[in-house]
Length: 118
Image 1 (cartoon, rainbow, N blue to C red):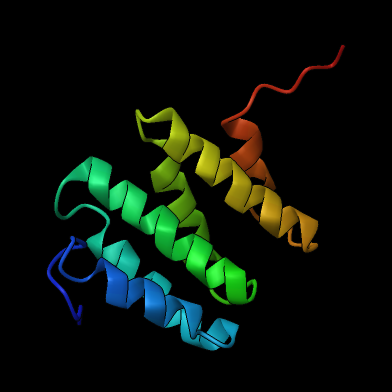
Image 2: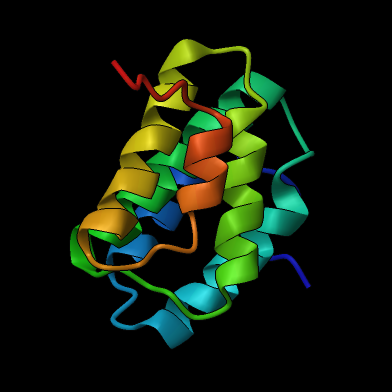
């Protein structure tokens, strides 16, 4: 059950404020689950940006890793964006997880970034 029909200007502020209050992975799990349901609703470009903003709000409080498949799915969605800043944000999120010792996003990051061997 989604609490909103889509991510938009009328609800994003409240969602971001709520995201900052997720105190553990368990709470963030429900948020990520709902974001997966909403990712294809509304204006694609705005929805991508809103998901980045929500992710950043969560990561400002902690680094949830419960239900890694949902996190992976959302980042995979962000990497499909045509907007370079969304892809950069996806990279930052993946890097954040890597810096915290979580490697489950590494294959996704590697698939979306050219690694120089020079």
